[in-house]
Image (tube, rainbow, N blue to C red):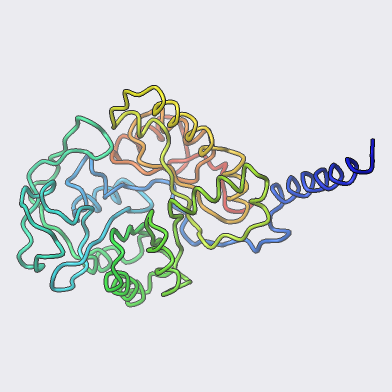
Length: 325
């Protein structure tokens, strides 16, 4: 072998060995995160398939079943109240052509008596029609002071972010509240305002992490985020009509690259929590367990709970993905 080949091949071989070593033992270079949230069963919007989404009744129902965490979304009203709602526009949930951001809290309408289930195409939920009010985030924190909450800040609004962070501080929830959004700018602002609050991966961060993993560089890079929350391919294919062969092939490819047990285990060794969403079918729950996710987010908390109990799984997920080795 010529010297011109020996040097680069030696360097490449050393890189592969070091990358593989740190993939298995990342704490040689990274301090392990120690999140206090140990949630395995997460109710998406409180369980949007069994109660009207993002209502107090939905949250209580999920917690009565033994769920570990609530997932919810927030917006800011015209009079600067932080409310729990996925949509800013009230058309889908209330049938009213108005925006939350242009409506005072006292003037917000009640939700419709039935809502479509967001990640279960063709299904509707009526739930407890006595509770149709859009709640304040403050109310949720007051009623469920010790319950972990995954909080999606829906818009890049400095005042909304500041008020959410202030509420988290006021109720001393920095250890049990996860904040963020798919938009990188929102996550950065949250992290800058309060670095001690756990942050979920933005879409940009997810793409970066996947690229770093498959290039072998991930073990060398620090990660500020603590919660990786991603969908799987069937969530998209079941809920959206993709007739193009190329689009369906792209979904399959992205799913194959994204849902990697090896990548998940590396992140978990670094103290990063992996959640899969929004899983509403048994084959999806089976896969989440198989690939080693820490938790499952669902619209159907009763069905997921029954599924786990029927299989003799402890607390909803098999105890194979602990935060410590």
